[in-house]
Structures are given as C-alpha cells and as structure tokens.
Length: 130
Image (spheres, rainbow, N blue to C red):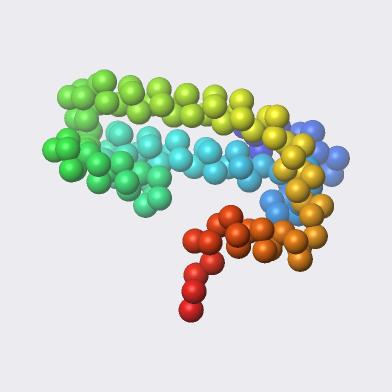
C-alpha cells in the first residue's frame, strides 16, 4: 500500500529505491516482509525466510509446540498474541519514526569522511575483520 501511495504522489510516476530522495519506500517494504513470513509460519509451519520466521520456529520447537496447520486451533492464545504483538510493533514504529523523519533526512547531508568513522564507532559488529 505504501508503494502504491508513493507512486501515486510521485512527480515522475515511478519509484526507485536507493536514489536518496525524501520519499523512499524501502522501510515500509521491510516491515511488510516480516508479516508475510509470519503468515506462512503460523498457518503452515514453514518460515517465510530465515531471518523473520526461523527464530520463531526454533522457539516453538524448543517449547514442544508443533508448528503447522493445527497450531492455531491448539494454541489460539499464542497465535493471537503473536499477531497482536505485530500490530503493537507497527504502531510503535509509526509513533517513533514520524518525528524522526527530519533527523534522518538531515543525516544524509553529513559528509562521508565524518559519517563512516561514526558508523564504525557505534556499530563495530557491522564491519567484519579479515
């Protein structure tokens, strides 16, 4: 939905991720991908991808909960709690991200020679040592 809305309000009628414009949709795409992974996990017991659903599948197996088609009928509180937590997470994401849009767009003006050492300082795990 975010992609269609962004395309509709675009001046050129097209959206390209990564061109450093103010109206990017990459964050919305990532949030939508995690929900899609949960649909297949909760209904079929198959994680949509390893990053989003695989950890929850492992947690189910550790706690002797059989993932699959009967998961929703045998453990409705678990499924509804998972779905409710996703809604709460999306709401918190909107509340936290809307005020920070200006800060994020201003941070793109920081020169690379200053930005790269700051990234190394705050995210040392992002850079793998050889």
